[in-house]
Structure formats: C-alpha cells, structure tokens
Image 1: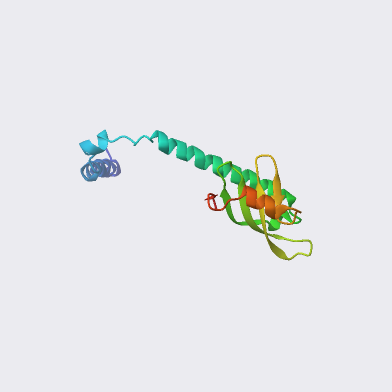
Image 2: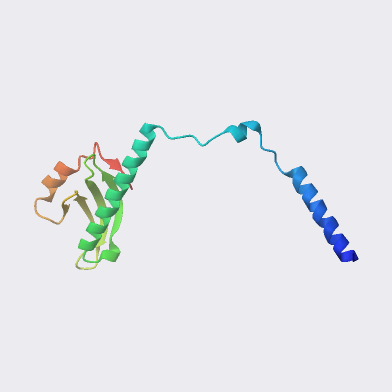
Length: 136
C-alpha cells in the first residue's frame, strides 16, 4: 500500500473514532418521548383558526377586485365575526389617485364598502367589534 492510502485510512479511522466519542448519546427519556398529541379542544381551535384565515383571504380577494386600483389595496386591520363575516379597515387609491381609508365587510354571500349607500347601518349590524376576533 502506498503512503497516501495509509494516511487516508488512518485519517478515516480517526474521524470515525472521534465522531463516535463526541456524538451526544440519546437518553432513555428522550427515546421514550413521543410528540404530544393535540386535545380535541386544541384541534377544534386550530380548525377554527384555519376557517377564519380562509374567510379573511377570500374576502381580501373579493374586495381587492372591487378597487379602482387593486394594486394599491392594503388591509390595515381585519377581524372575523363568529358567523365568519370579515370586517376590514383598509387603504386604497380613489379615482383621483389619493389614498383613502375605507372600511368594508364580506359575508359568505355578499360584501359592502364604506362608499355604498346604507353602509353604516349594515356595518353596525354585521360587525360588532366587541365580539370580533382579530386576524390582522
């Protein structure tokens, strides 16, 4: 065997020994630990959070399409009602190119923005901020 091969073999053996010595050992407790399973309540909460987020995203896209300049649409805050109506506070460019603050809500079947007639009464009915759960 050539010297280079001997040196390579010795280096490989040393590397293996060092790796075995310094490798952290798994304790019995670590081996026995299993990931904690979620309780039924935790599963329900996670599912509800996903539903709220889905409602927020769907409403976001509905509103964005209605803007005069959809690329300017920016949600400042949003919250979801128990019936999955989402209430938004947003900024978007108006017809003159200035950024306006607006509010809107999106239900499972319709939507309304603050520039529509009768919006204030509908908003009070749909968006009771005392029970609204914030998503943004």
